[in-house]
Length: 107
Image (tube, helix red, strand yellow):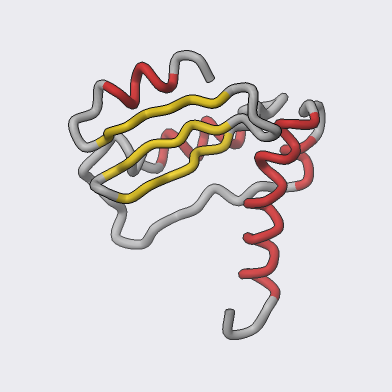
């Protein structure tokens, strides 16, 4: 959480980087190409799946090269194991949204 704002500030298309580590769910507020973004964080205890995903997918914040079909990292229940409360809150919102999009017809 501490090194990420430094990396983000160095990107020419990212502005107004404001880390808020003391929030109920730690967040970095930033603007990317004029779009306001709240970036949440969570640390996985086993990053094998995440590293495999990262090796196959360009980072949309740091790369101008985008895949033809976006591929989203799917958060599984096992990714929540070993997380502290703020990490679970960070990842659970996305996980629930992914579950709804997968299981609700015509969403």
